Image (cartoon, rainbow over all chains, first blue to last red; front, side):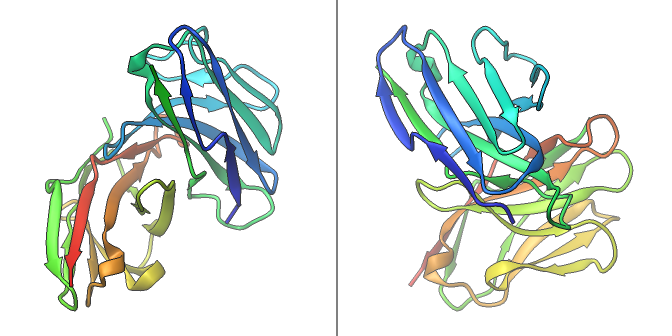
Length: 118
Length: 115
């Protein structure tokens, strides 16, 4: 499976500011995803990060609030813009369809970024 | 619509006893089913999956799961629980029809294994 890292691991931010979260994979992957998770609760898919094109957002999530970049097959960023306390959550990056491996069915997750907005 | 249900918010079991974490699903066609585990302050770790073939699949850390098509279930099991198995467990189904890359996650079940 791929090794996925996220930066920062946690942050405390002020209302109205923006935070960019980085996701780095140790091998080229076809698909990258961003999820949000309230502590102890289920995951909600924010968007699929597409390499070379605009991200595909799920219902309830918009590009102005959560801009995503995917400049290559191993890296993506998620920005949480104009933050409010309601954005306090864990943000998880995941990858699938590893091109250098044989497992094309499974999503693998990064360690997550714990965000607190004051 | 695709969906996954985990009917138990929490499961308590004594160390050494068998454990079961329940999952039922609703999908169109044949499902791809997964189990993940999340330890405190960590991301999700892949445990096992069912794609096709034998209904009993074996995964990491001694866990296994049984796919039951007639009951639309995919319960996670382990013959002898360890205290270190205490964590949050998620069942997931992969959409094979409308968006092949989209996973639907259950609400999670907290497993408590008491010494």
